[in-house]
Image (cartoon, rainbow, N blue to C red; front, side, top):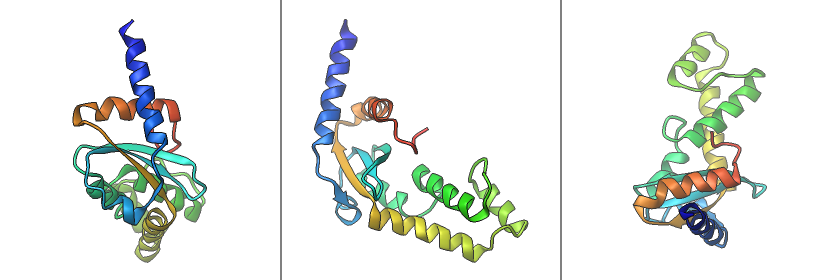
Length: 155
């Protein structure tokens, strides 16, 4: 019954992560460790869990900079575009963006304003927990957290 000890071990990681302080973006982006990161929206609801084998510092900067750099940013921007356009988009890629611009469904200026609002929301409204762990454990801990928490912006 080795799986029971694995589940207990992963559950302990989740409990330890849940005890971590919620950090504002400015503080969280300064943490220079390989980690699992848990993202809370402005209502303090967990919306995303990710991992980084580089450093939290680099990954959070990517998250708050451009839809092409991080899946959470892309999903948030897609949601904002759908509200703006009053339609559902299959996905948000460079090709989608170009089609929207070519079809004049959105201007480049409006697209940039929506991207900026997503970036500011991440930087100013979201909170983060960064759970450092050994690189070899990142994926299994991330998958366990996602399966238990079921954040809306994780696939």
